[in-house]
Structures are given as C-alpha cells and as structure tokens.
Image (cartoon, rainbow, N blue to C red; front, top):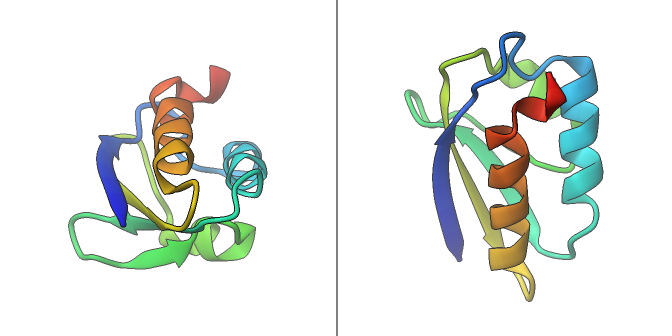
Length: 89
C-alpha cells in the first residue's frame, strides 16, 4: 500500500468537473484507489464519481490518497499532482 496526503486547493473544491477529471485519471490505473477525508476518515472509491461527490471535499480539506496494486505509487502520485494543480481552475 502507498499513501500520500494533500490539501484541496482549488476554490470550488471537488465539484462535478474536477471529480470527473479525478475519476478519469484514477481509471488509468489498475490499482484499487481510495480517497479519504483526513479529519474524519470518511473515504470513497477514487473511481466512483458519486461516492467522491458525497464526500463534499471543499477548498482547504486535507485528503489522503491510498492505493494497493501493481501501479499504486504511480496512481497516488498522479492524483496528488492533479489535486495540487487545482484542476486548472
């Protein structure tokens, strides 16, 4: 298992378009990937738009990404990079 924490930095948080971009990125990897809100541990499958939307991740929310599988490090690093980029907003 590989894990990494980051903070949602874009103004609008993870709303529909960023979540779609996030899930599209997640689906490029075979590993099982989870995104969790650090404050309460609530988590979601990083390949599910609906489950991520239910987390209501806003700007300033600290999240942890974790993955298990053959490309776990690449998956987590790519998703952290996407979040840190602010989704181009």
